[in-house]
Image (tube, rainbow, N blue to C red; front, top):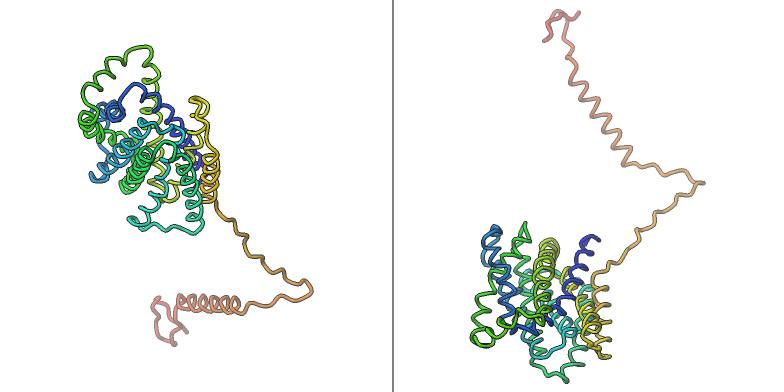
Length: 345
């Protein structure tokens, strides 16, 4: 993976890490399922009017929208609305990485080398340490909802890789057309019209400004920029190579939640974070092998002739001589005209 692509993957990790703080701010104003529908509807309407549909199979476009756009944020937003901390959610959502590697091996027959397998396993162990440290405090339902979001992210990764769009921005924008209707239907059924109406009638006050800023950040930085770069990378590298970079997202997420929301990470979370970083670095590093040393000839000895080279050279000379001979006119007997019209004596 070129260094420029590595830097792009790190930039996406930074953008998505800050995304969890923005989601937390938006959830203070809007119900979670309605917020998902609103987030994608803001982009879906201009996309349908202005952006040409990407030239990809429809099944992969729908799969990307249902996995990355719908199922991921269904689990994530519900889990965070149920009280799951923003910093920890950024960590648990990275279960998408092992899910992606597993689905890539099962469905796409991608090869998983031993070094990458060890790195991903260490990172997954770090996620488990964090989950066990926090699951007993907040309950397991929010934790499992966020894990479900990670599985949706992995499904979206596989679909976007199979789509192989030449215009990843178009694919990302058209992905936003899929989630609004199913999420709005779920919101009306689960959250109800009254809760939705209350969130909208109080949305144009000074207290709702942070929620709107968080929503704009998730739309522009999280969805448009971050997802476009991510899809571009997934189309050019195996899923098992790109997905581990998502494990760096919780580093940013935990630090920003600590600074802005006062979420102090537990010792288990810190230990798990170290394992996550170490696993990602190990999985994406390459072992540099030195080329075999060339034997140094002894200056006191005559060089050994190369019989193969001499034979090849001699054969080439013979072949050249024969070719030149065929190009010369054949001698004729006295009194007989040759093909050139001259008489040889």
